[in-house]
Image: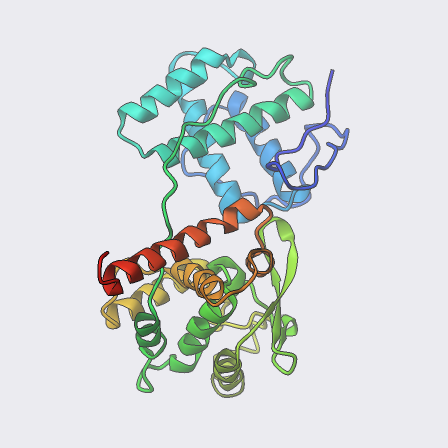
Length: 336
């Protein structure tokens, strides 16, 4: 018997699984594909599951790629042991696979992601009647250490934001990107997917499409507004190609929408120029949240601005701020 299913973690609203045939043709065939595909007996249920996650749940392409990679790796492991499809999957198979990952020296966080992907997938297979019982019902997540996010100090952030120089051909675009990332705490994917009709500079806000296709309104600071307006009026018209029209705000030199990977490369390039190491777009997002909390912002407001579904995700920034306070005591107290 099938049951309701939701791959969403606790705290998100659940959707009931539509009782359509699991072999129905997907609405859009552009589901991410891995370079190594398992045997057909394993591949089709994974493909149908990814289509469900994309169409019904609105998961991002990066999440779908991660799920496909993890499930394909498990499928290859099962096929190597002589199994033909997912119906033969047992709890012992999954634990053996986890031990193999651990033996390869993979990080605990990577193994934890595998566990999460497999648990959600087997729950889906049970919900559509493909499996009589979920073999991973009692599978638990490995414990991972909570790592404090890396943040930049005021001088470091100022140096990064000023690193694009006028002689750089895309200085106006790159400066606007850095300013918006820090001023609004956007993810790299959210910035890359930003479209012109969602940028309201006169109102000092942008409308962002976040994880799970959830929209939120995010304020934009004055410096970011000025940098973005300058880019939109002076550089974007030169990058725009009439034969390749697009509404995306940030364009590449060929007129195509700037991709997420390009945003990462851009931030790392200017961080290197500013003499900063281990800086990526999420570092600016972390700094945005930490600076707000350090300035007295309410945790719930920061949660809303970041687009977090669970406030526990936002609470990590309070620990970052607390570590700053400890550093100030060690530095300035006469008897630290």
